[in-house]
Amino acid sequence: MIGKYSAKLDEKNRLFVPSKLRGELGDVFYVTLGVNCGHRCLTVYTAAEWQKLSENFNALSISQRAGATSLIFMNAAECSPDKQFRFALNQFLLDYAGIDREVMIVGRAGQAEIWDAGEFERFEAENLTPEKLLASLEAIGL
Image (cartoon, rainbow, N blue to C red; front, side, top):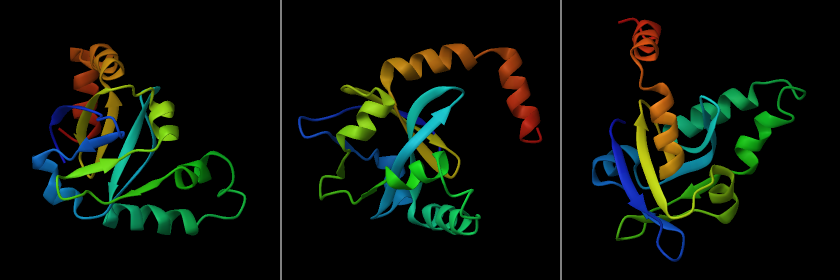
């Protein structure tokens, strides 16, 4: 998944799935807590990615499945867009990510992220430097 898309929550806390992400996300996807460079956001997983994440979680020891790791699953929402390609987010997830109304949906390889628009602007300003971009390119082997 790639790109960034601005959106607005409607009065029922629903978002439209951006048309370029509809095919990649599929009919069912999962939204849960996320964090990127110290900023809170929501992470969106396809059903296949969620299955891998679940298998990895289930392979952990009982002690490793406690605490923060389990919060990802406890607070997840299974989402199925309606005929207008809208999906609802619960208030806990919105509060966690500080999302009010204006949203930025961004692709992140095999996942997507949902950000409060203002928080995403701060994140982008902090990280859009030549030094950080070079380090990112080197980290992925370019």
